[in-house]
Image 1 (spheres, rainbow, N blue to C red):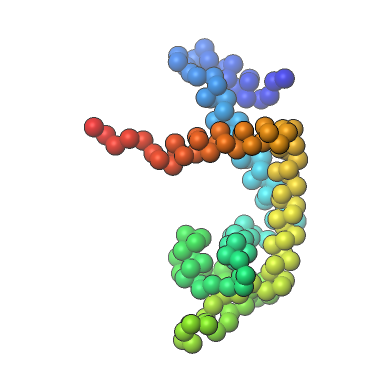
Image 2 (cartoon, rainbow, N blue to C red):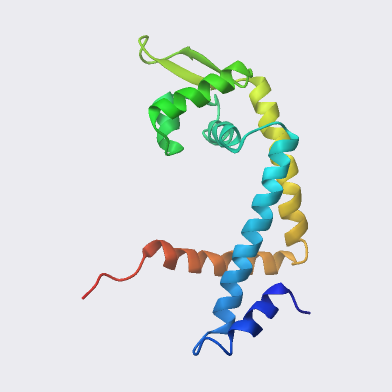
Length: 168
């Protein structure tokens, strides 16, 4: 069975001497899958009236676990944002009722950001719709194949994260 990447490789093979069709195929397919999942995620966020940054903030608060509360500084660090940009995002989320500012439990001069029930619901509804497409796409593989794919991609990612060797 052929896909669009097979056509891509076929076009480039005569033009690029030494092109490894398996490496090109793997990388190009990963790029296509990431684009597909991102497009679906964007559509699901729009359906739930969430911006990507809003969702990322709710997602981070959920990931931190109960009580889904942390400092604005930690959120900004986790999301690689400036404090000013984080303040603007938190203002918008608070206005929508998804987070609230609460007195810090450790320093009464500071505030913490806490996820509200409405924020949890917004995150839960959006993540369920996003996960559906990931499950659908991977359903063409059985559980052993999904594990194998995950293990192979882990090895590739470790190599990428390690980076190239230093120049000699």
